[in-house]
Image (tube, protein in one colour):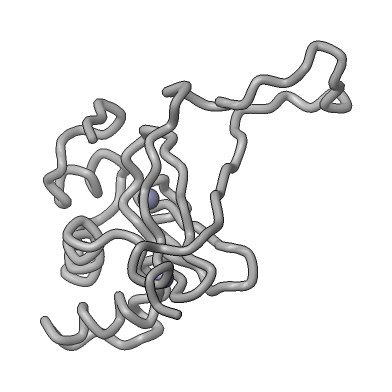
Length: 147
Ligand SMILES: [Zn+2]
Ligand SMILES: [Zn+2]
């Protein structure tokens, strides 16, 4: 998956590009999610705390700040807790396992948002629309073979 939306993948550069101070907790959260996308907040907390002394609240604050500045993307599967991933700007979608909750990336067929074509006759009630959120649901290979 390639993207030119963000200046490289150096976490310190990413933070500076958004005018954010470079702090150890922010670097830790970005590197955890770069290595393993779609983690829940508690999983991010567990990984980050292994590498140093950061409070749970500190990790939540970092997650919120990085989402607000467009460095992280929060995905909220229906009926599930939020997952986090590094924002790649590629408008990709997700397929979610109904059974184990596994989240996997699906490349956007259209390539850019909003990627769903609306029939000419469909009105969006005057809204200026820039994104369509698409989530596919089913069973992952592991769950599909488990009776
Ligand atoms: Zn599954
Ligand atoms: Zn993703």
